[in-house]
Length: 394
Image (tube, rainbow, N blue to C red; front, side, top):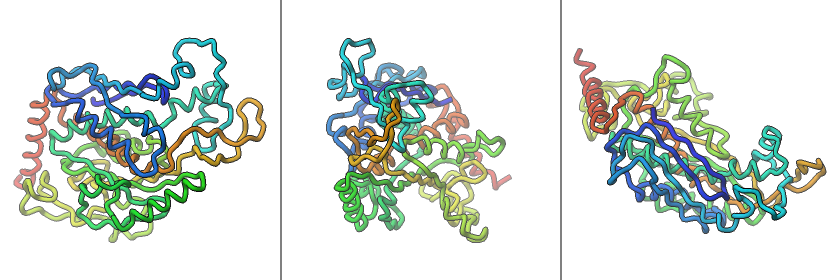
């Protein structure tokens, strides 16, 4: 079982990650994890926090001489901003009078969290509810990505829309263009209008949302299962994406678009693949699909086509020009609390989406192929692919 846990607050000492279920013998180093953490920090529309942090995960345990040991992997990401919050976020009691935050922010976890846990200071909620926690997820996702890469499974993401400006994507996507874009957008013509939309929101003291898409290639047929609700891979993928801060909608493949189509316009016709092999579009099955409206998932299982999942991101709720709200303790009408924030996080959310999809696929891969050592896992994977390619011969 591949799983992970995170701990830490936005302005605490740092973030801790525990990753369990990685086979022994997987090559893993801090530079590999740092590359994904750096990708999460960039993007036009980010706020001042990203100018402070230089995220890098220290591998504390589970790796020796560049290879995993099969034991839990512990990672630690230091919060550089902790230097400015040592008293306000001290673990131990302090004598200083630390002002409480009581002005609730619409759209945030403030109200529900304060009432649920009985807090009279909203900072006790917002520190953990903050999207700062996603840095820990990206670190865990980088470990998962390394595991998947050993089985030739690759994951990318790109920005589909920001503030109503929609990119026109012509496959195949040039991922080098995406990585060079300040918005992680594959459409250079849409990019200026997206930047203009972000600038307009910033000038108005507002925030702006959008859509991102994550694509995984190389996954073999049969990850996940149709036999029970909680083993269906599309359900697990959707839950993972919905757990990302500010995500309010998820679609797989054609997603919500299929609601307006007939069945004949929706389902992907299957044909025999006459030359399955390393250069084929779907090399791990003797069959292929003429289209991919299903997004690589049928009946809760991978079908050999690329996995395609989109997520809709609402504008983040911390506004420079705050919305009307109420005080948690007095109930009086006030303006919502404002603390340093981003204007647009869609490009970064795509990187987080990659991490979450990698984690779900790593879990599914280990369910299917198991193995306490990478050679055993890869051997199981290779045997299964050979079995698939021989199916039509029996």
